[in-house]
Image 1 (cartoon, one colour):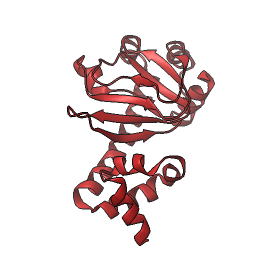
Image 2 (cartoon, helix red, strand yellow):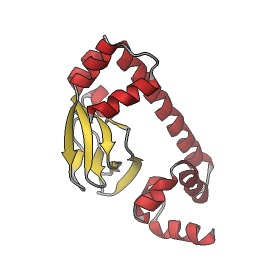
Image 3 (cartoon, helix red, strand yellow):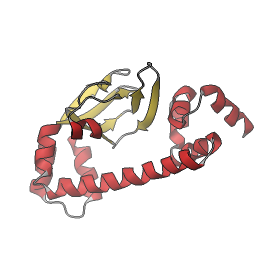
Image 4 (tube, helix red, strand yellow):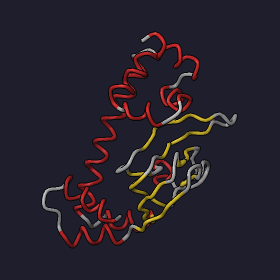
Length: 190
């Protein structure tokens, strides 16, 4: 399974240094989780970074009143990290829940951050990943700030149509910030 990360790195980075590539792959180990398991429980401190090989994970934020909001559904070849917790070394209300059985590569955050200081290949990989995520988040934020619920649903249709086939409507409604009833109305008007 480490081979999948190696192939991704080679696709993303032109002529990566083999020694640096080996260093990256050595800090990761394969772990499997069952559906419904939290890879990182809410209100805990993040101690690992992951790379999703198989399955789907939802990034979920828990409110103090017990409500939960699905921030994002992660699909294969996604990095999984609670960056706020990693940077602040504080617990956050962010959790990562398996939507089905998953396989991920996991690295201890301390080893990852140490390697980030010296490994140019890892730096380039993370830079490209951050750029991709920043653009995606920017587009999503604009859709939320400027658009209606219908616009946010259209955003999902255009950018992640596979989500609608894989997951229950209540989860999709949470991602776009509306109730399942509102989502049903929007879908019926199409």
